[in-house]
Image (spheres, rainbow, N blue to C red):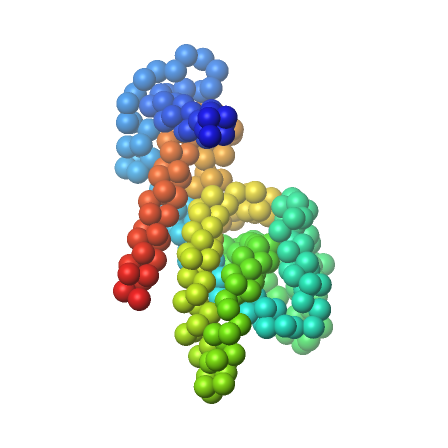
Length: 281
């Protein structure tokens, strides 16, 4: 265990403590930092940077959409695949392809899809006689966040499909066959046998979906950069701009520590909720 523990210590734990130290400084990353204690945190939450509150709200909204839209879709597809669909192996591979494709490539592809002049989406709406539905999908601050969520859903739904699929395949077929003989419907089998049997997989998927939404950066940065008018900002994009555009390593490190604590707290909450559900059952 010692080599793995040392690697974890120096690659994961040590940088967190270093960032915590930087967050107590007023520092541009080059000169000598000035110790200011918790001022960066006070400025973060009680200062004039209201944009950070909006970014937190956006990330929580993405997390909610991931849990209540992405995961149910993934479970539905996994349930269908695990039921013995023709071409099962082919579809497993197809669903997983977006996960392994570069995020920059995916971002550029969706920029072309959403383009208001020649984009595939607006061209499709025009072709089916719904030209009045055409939008500046990434330029309208009211729908930009939802437009960004669609590529996020498309990219990672396949990952959760494979997790659910693997879990469903572990359900003993004897239980399912016995339920069918007793006259249980497909939905009853799903919710009374399959779901309780893979609750640990569901817990893992919920945690991964929530943490992934809170940490998301690359796809949003490529597609919108946090715009328009900060409508798609999330804490990671604000942190990036603070660190590398405003060159404020103290405030940027404070944001990084907040993201870490946010992920940790929500993970603990999710585990507690699933623990209570398991206890009640």
